[in-house]
Amino acid sequence: MNPDYVTVNAAAEEKDSASVLAYFRKAVQLRKSNPTLVYGKYTIIDRNNPLVYAYTREDGQKNS
Image 1: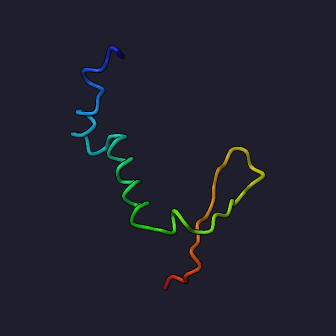
Image 2: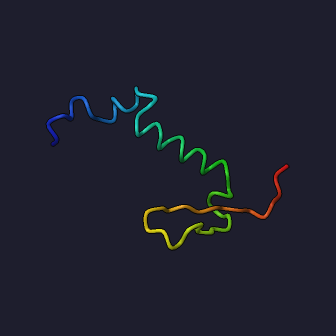
Image 3: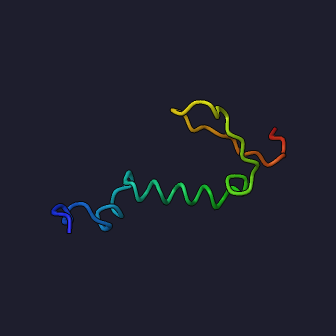
């Protein structure tokens, strides 16, 4: 076990609204509530730039 398990653990993450666990849960919730993030057309924006991973997801619907 890691020596800091007393302070760095799931119970501590549960209590912290700014924790990595809280962020991950928000990201999963966003993905579940927006099918475009899962099934939308995936397009890489700058394929030739090794320092940037940027892409778009589109579902074919126009937003007003």
